[in-house]
Length: 134
Image (cartoon, rainbow, N blue to C red; front, side, top):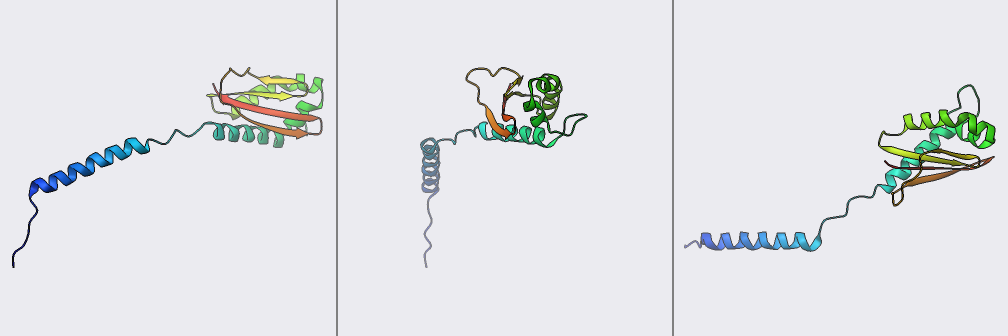
């Protein structure tokens, strides 16, 4: 009984063809796009709003969001503390802007920046939280 053997050059050629086809397929299929930062930013905005909606203001019984929306006087009194509280809650590279019926807290949004946002209705009006990488 005789056994057949493949020559070494045939094996090398087959491996070379597989390599070329693999590289060509890699270019054809391409690379998946990088994941968008928007879902993470939306999540950060929702988390920030949840924190402000569940945590009472210092020395009070109302949550931050309710107290910010209640009146202009309440908003003006709480604006510096709100800025500090939200800055502590968010990662250092994330900027924010909170819009209430009586004004805004935070930073102006740069143009053409990806932003995550959420709006929370309160009995005194809606509050919108926007966050972005700064």
